[in-house]
Length: 52
Image 1 (tube, helix red, strand yellow):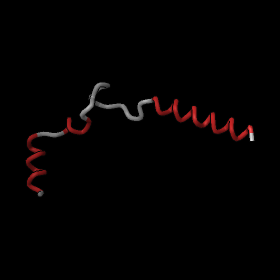
Image 2 (cartoon, rainbow, N blue to C red):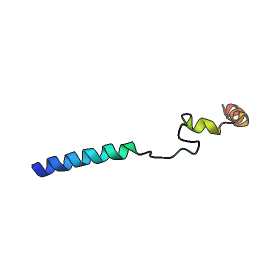
Image 3 (cartoon, rainbow, N blue to C red):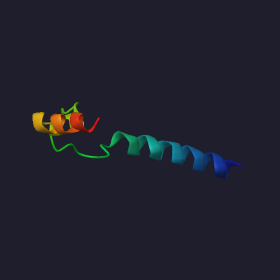
């Protein structure tokens, strides 16, 4: 029983530690909060609007 408790605690700590890491670096810098909106251009918006 103690073995399973130790395993569960270790697993819990490992997920917390891995969650702290950045899972994917942003090509727009560390402070980027907009994400893919950086790829929008006026021409792309017009093309997308013509599809609907």
